Figure 1 (cartoon, rainbow, N blue to C red):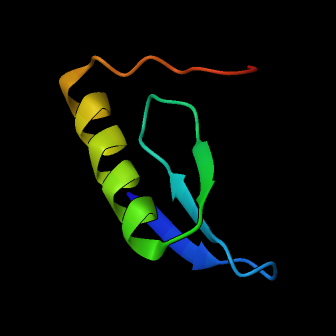
Figure 2 (spheres, rainbow, N blue to C red):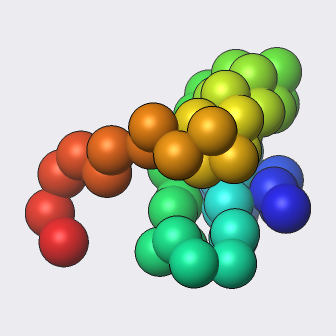
Length: 56
């Protein structure tokens, strides 16, 4: 399930939480970008092909 919130710096933060996967957070300039990214990330997690990038 994804949660999209507005940050104090006027950006959008998407948080994806899925059972069995680490919580994934990313910020975006627009709400639409955040929604698109979270939808794609959730889909990858459901299919089992999500690969976390960046620091662990």
